[in-house]
Amino acid sequence: MRLLVVALLTIAAVTPAHAEISATPVDSLALPGGEITGLTWAGTDTLALLVAQTDSLAIDEVHQMFLVVGDTSGTIYWQEEFTGVLARGLAWDGEYFWSCGDDAEGGSLLYKIRADTVAVEEVYATPGHRPMSLAFDGRWLWLTDRDNGRIDRIDPETGDLTRSVGAPGFSPVGLAWDGVAMWVTDSGTGRLTRMRGNRLQRREEVAADGWFLRDQDARLAHDGHSLWVLPAGESYLRRLILD
Image 1 (spheres, rainbow, N blue to C red):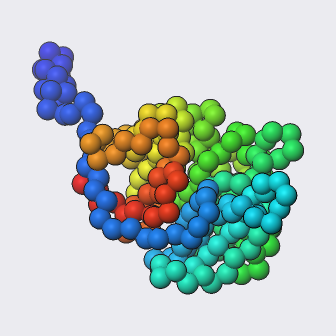
Image 2: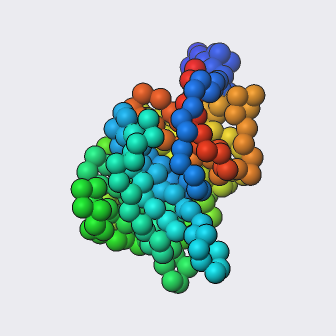
Image 3: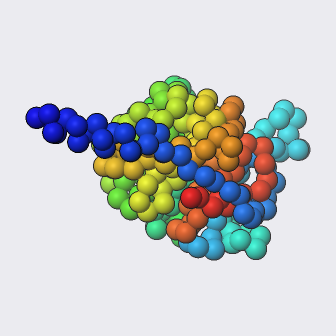
């Protein structure tokens, strides 16, 4: 028993209590005007955006919401207006877009949108009332629940909640899946965290000298090769090199 205790203490001594990741922005991609409230890659050269634009002809300030799909050169393939329907978050599962909107009673709804017809095929109630971002991991759909400080896993076939995990911070916003791990930004702590494992229990933060965006709703997207970030209020999507 004493040998086992000594061995465990030795392992603890050589294992870092808190591993950190370095992040370096290397290039950027210009985005169309308006407030980006959701983004996702729908292929290596296809980017989909949820864009809120102000209607300058309206008497009162009215925000129009558009789902815009285009390529990295700035060419827009198509756009569709979803004013009063969609509000935040965007994910792509290979066939459908997913996004969230607010209902009249203060809750939130999850919309399944067919890409070729832009038709809403399913609407589900979300577990929380203010999801901020969405990510698809090849099987499940994940949502950041900002008000409850958690990340929810949804079955896209039924809309059922299948798992909830506590977020690394208390105000999770951006979310992206890189094929192995989940990345999440938190506006309350200003940090970017990588989460791995069956229950996302293994967590590593990006070092503060490479990433610290407190009180900013930073969005994330992964193109299959690189992680991209969009800080609040910016019109350039930035690609990160992570080590």
